[in-house]
Length: 69
Image 1 (cartoon, helix red, strand yellow):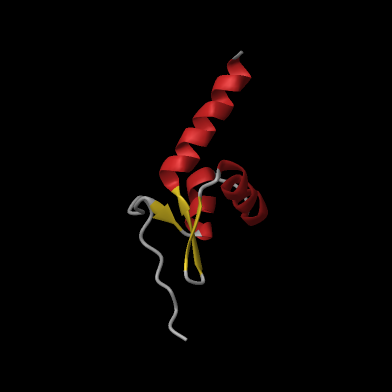
Image 2 (image 1 turned 180 degrees about the vertical axis):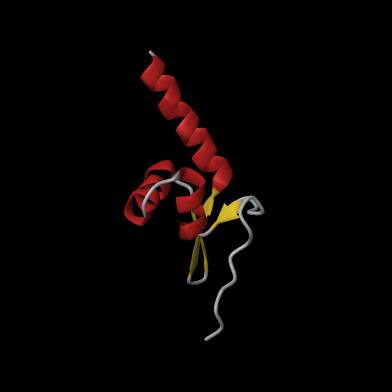
């Protein structure tokens, strides 16, 4: 099987792998997966699972808005 090559840091597009979500958010693997589920950011293309960065950003913004109230 061919090894998947991850993009360089900061070069990720809209759709991120779980490893890229971990780097983007600073979370561990299980918390990053939980964030993807809770935010509705999971997108499946065949067997591949990716996470929508825009949805994650919007979800994180709503979390910070509710904490300030």
